[in-house]
Image 1 (cartoon, helix red, strand yellow):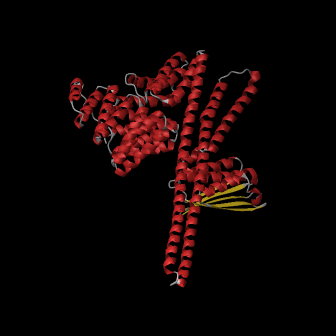
Image 2 (cartoon, one colour):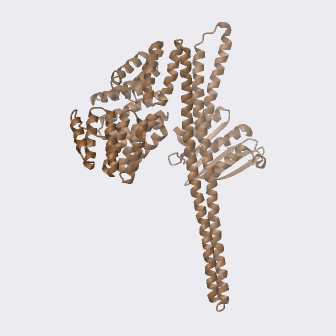
Image 3 (cartoon, helix red, strand yellow):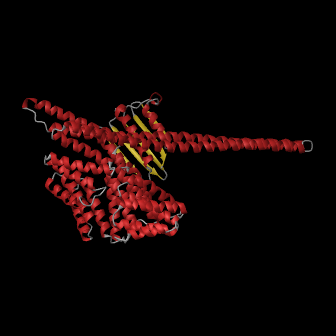
Length: 638
């Protein structure tokens, strides 16, 4: 399967090719004539004609059941739809091509389709599906040792991580990609990695390092004569300058980018560069000019079905209209923004719930089927045993009475043993069903925590930041100054509280630095609340620890330390995590007032801890002495 096509594309001969196709019979040779006509339209940059021709070639290939023609025409149709900005329509064709590549054992072709699906989902704003497809391609390219393609897909993965604000992972991915491209002496690829690293360093507030990497990328792009990439670098520079309020430099960068994209529209870049110019105009308080840029960008984002940037543009455009006194239209745009935000949130929530429900139902049905099969085997075995016993008795009743009695007793003993084995197997499967249900419940809780944390941080946190910015722009008189300062203090406390709650529900350190980093962060917070906390981590690394297990271990330690903080009246706390071979030992010890386990066992906190330990197939031991403190020891498999 080809990933790209170096079409020689003639600028003439369309009429003659169409005449030949019209006269040709419906056979495999006609499929290749459609292929030639498609390539000609590609060279003429006529995507709608490409779609029409690919459709005819695909219909004919299906009619002839011609696998090779299907390979080409499915890819041609998806590519043409993508070029025409109809990415949603391209996705089913990419998925069909992926399925066909898998059936034929074409691993390289399957990886290429994964890449195209990832790009299509990324443009739709579905980052998780994009990442899933990119990782599928990465696995294949690593297995096939295709370094050039591996370097490119690493860049795509880095872009998803960057969009998800997982900057530490993105930096590592881009550095690995840069080294591969350096080995391959790929100047264009090196420039792309440098540009992406610059964007990551900008988000990490390493501005000098960010600008240096972007300028290195610019020099390489100019050297290889890639004007589109030069323009995209100017967009990145514009964003860095704008974030640091270097308005003139930002405006110059965005204008240089727009000189290219004005005549070469791009699904990815065109709305963003106009968005940047609009924000520059807002900084200069030229609200009418900002409105013009935002409207142009919004129109492009609607055409290209880019919901995430459309949400930002609706808010920006509403603000520019409000500043001009056009409050009625601004209000309508704000309502549209709220509706779009709710729609995006609901789409993500429903997608997550549907995925979890499907996984649970599939597992449940598999377990029920296995139990039914075991029960059927048991009934069949019993029936066969009875028939065998009846025949045996009829033939040998008088001659071998004592022998028959011994044999019957032996059969009964064997039957009892088989029955006990079957009972244990059924009991084990039922226990597995309980664990599956518990797993689904815990996964649902964590996903809901993540969603609420994101909503608090992104929606309410952003709203409080906007309130604080607007409030600070007010000029109060001297008599109102104490009230002004008190209100400002309360807004800051509310903003900090939202950040604290969001962090407690889904700490960023768990995603960025793994379990050890998240526990360090937890210990630091406990010390800030006046508790002398010592953390020891021995032999534990996050590389080989599955994410689900890491989250549950973190929640167990978090619940234990919360109990110490709320109830124990302790001064000192020791947290130990020790990995010994295939076991992780967790010890949480405090010098508090202790408690009676029988009285505390019904509490929701202890119940939650026991549920998570059971889910991890571990064991827990409580040792609490009134007035002397509490020690909790937990063992779970890695």
